[in-house]
Amino acid sequence: MIEIALYQPDIAPNAATVVRMCACFGLTCRIIEPAGFVMTDSAFRRAGMDYLDKAALRQDRSWAAFRQATAGRRSVLLTTKAALPYTEFAFRPGDILLMGRESSGVPEEVHEAVEARITIPLKPGLRSLNVALACAMATGEALRQLRGFP
Picture 1 (spheres, rainbow, N blue to C red):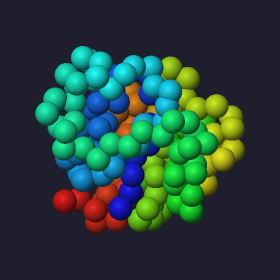
Picture 2: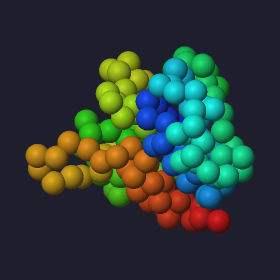
Picture 3: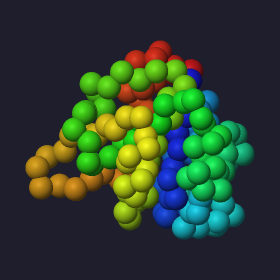
């Protein structure tokens, strides 16, 4: 199945919301450090509620450590800088849906390293969706395509 990866997340409640979603769908969530909070942060625990204990959560100490741990798998970056809509992308089992930081996305080196880039089309003049909402939309499409809902 797919996995979700959060690149250096900086808003604890958003990250916890994604982890909660992963728990509900039986997906692994990877957090690529450094994060802008600690996992014991009260806002993180509050947003994740009792789902955090049911989640498959992995922490990668850096982008390089993440790439090493996931070698051979396709990283699919959800970004406002892509042209391909997520609904037109063909997800495959083993894909890792990569989400950028809420405040700054991902650096150019990450854009260059990923195997695919997708976007959620928005009304002109608007920048982006909340990262947890965008992640849920793309995850739902991937699970639909792969018949991966529990």
